[in-house]
Length: 235
Image 1 (cartoon, rainbow, N blue to C red):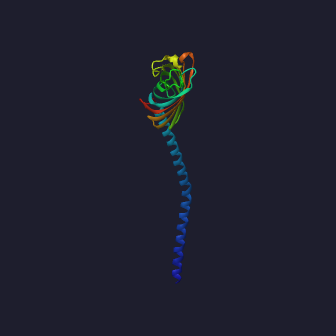
Image 2 (cartoon, rainbow, N blue to C red):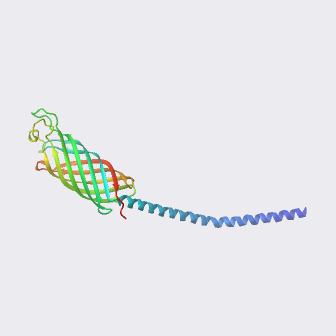
Image 3 (cartoon, rainbow, N blue to C red):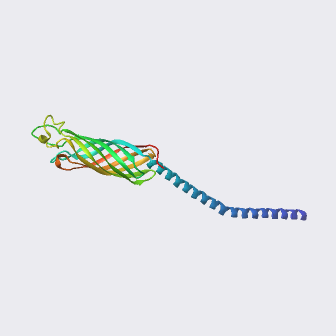
């Protein structure tokens, strides 16, 4: 029995020694594991920043973009007439001189009905249309992986057709602007949400000024459409 107790005591001491060694190893490994986790987290953050930087460079490094869509405009079609609502189509092309500065060309057509009210000619509000052809600088104010903001100013010409739906009466008869070409200018923001480096959806709030009849027509514009960027990205 004494031999049994001695043997049991030896086994118990051996188990205690093993347990102590395991505790020491575990205590030493916890800080090392935490340090390794922190190192992995730092590496992941660095990798994420590098990936975003590559995406931004690829997105805004394309030398060309083409865009188009539809929109809405508030327009005054005669000196003494109320503003009318118009629907628009638009298309634009941008050539980037560098990742921030580019040359933007835009074509926009707008259609509506002049609010002439009751007249002695007894005709309904005639259909009118305007076609703007403009170009100017575009400057990138914000460039992020998922969104970007460009500001632009443009100048050019606007072709107005105001008496086409007046059933033979002249523009002067019904109080709308005389047709033909007039100077035009515009300023606004292109707000882009990027689906990928080549494709985005664009919303454009803008101001459009035209000069028919020797006066300035101040119009509010809101366009929406799709942007496609192409060409080999610049490094």
